[in-house]
Image (cartoon, rainbow over all chains, first blue to last red):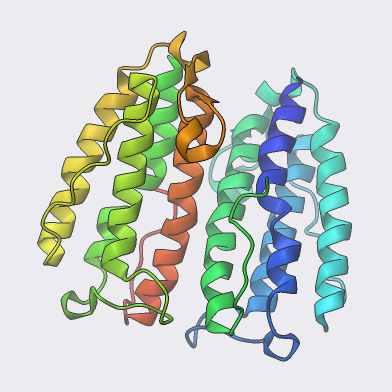
Length: 154
Length: 154
């Protein structure tokens, strides 16, 4: 198994929970935030998609590239469509990274204060996604969702 | 760097956030739960400590061993002491695992439905801890904490 395939298997075990999680919440509560300064449910889903897409694109390109433009997220279906589109894009970027490229340094100093090897950037992508997905589970309960997926997709 | 050292560095980047996170919340709200069926803040901290200790002990022993006994968790200081004790124990167990042992199969079928290689068990330990720590950040905000650590210890 290539390093990219191994990262993809790990990443998908979390990413593939996002659509069922979004599907579980009431359509009229997508702007829910648990406390005043929080990101809303909708914004936190987008934050996960955008950051993971940005990290994967950077690991592929060897440098940070432009942040993706926010698509329509006005309805639950639009959120699910965005998950689908960005999952496909992020998957393709990770899949394109060769084993040698995993060790190469990515120019990330402007954002992270240090240049990181591609493998560290991809590990951070997954950690960041698990962290915020965990938060979305609490959001979903507070929004009234009763049946939630397991936190890892099997 | 041995495989154990690499896992320890990754694990500590999350575990070492737990004490400052607990320190940030009000002493009189440790029983806070965001929704009726939720684990309380106190219980969720213990859940992280207990599961990580159990997974690390199993990876070391090659089989599931007894769950650790719950220590005093009645005050914030008791919680901080438990974090310290269990972090030391879990660290020692992971540190003792040789590179060869990472590939060996652990008898986990009774709990997971399948026997898992030690390396997969340790990866799950970290994922599980990040997931619930993310939830504790939402709890802490809802409990009135204003200054929180970053989600990764640097």
